[in-house]
Length: 324
Ligand code: NAD
Image: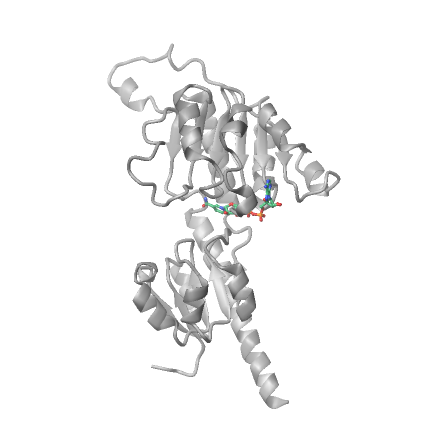
């Protein structure tokens, strides 16, 4: 039923208090399952003013065509590779990501998995409880302190990772072609900016924080993996497609790499039978690096407020236009 209020459709999970805050001003249709119900989604979008998504809803030109009134897309996260930005801008649809709101969660994931994989000693509970004592096997772990973290992509998350890595005594080097060598962020975070290849060669841990765009696809392929030290750890929380999964699995299996943590995959969910299955020293997580109780709250609150401001400003604009 049309209420005269602007309509918001939320197609994936959003923190309840933030949804309630939207209901104060708008007619809100929030169903976490909508992402898997394309027909219901497109019918709800027929008269919607705003759509709020996570990373699974594909905001394509076709979906926009089903939503002629849409003026705002809220993204409960940071990466925008599931949103056709060109089509949105042609239509005048504004896109609001939750910039910065899940950076702490991702950065802590990077530090935690770095420490786990460098040391290699934290998964012995079952063996120790059963009376085994794998002390010799587990006594060759590495300390992070004194080692080098290479941060590839030095935006919001990369910079926070650099600060945390410095906090545990690591040297930090970074590569980002869009940040000039004299930019303040290098010095402020105690990071030495360098070329991609030099950063790879220097690294005990490489962590990738770039958007998925054509120029970053397979950024870490077989040739780049070969430049790494044989004990180096690779961490990818950015997007699948940035690392060649087959080449990574081969490097791990052949002992040319110390370990890897992957939170994101070229195809999500990862299909059974992936070359990654069974590779050693590999931590796989289901795209949760940015998800914590606190980050969910921050992300949802930020997107709710950005979408509210944009829709209310739009109401003000159209009132103003009518008045004059
Ligand atoms: P950001 O836009 O602040 O930073 C990205 C940086 O990458 C920019 O500084 C850009 O100049 C740099 N870059 C672009 N192309 C590059 C290249 N070829 N080589 C090196 N650097 C390059 O983004 P952010 O907030 O730091 O997030 C980074 C990515 O992390 C996002 O695009 C998103 O896909 C991903 N992410 C994942 C999760 C998760 O839960 N796994 C959560 C948040 C963000």
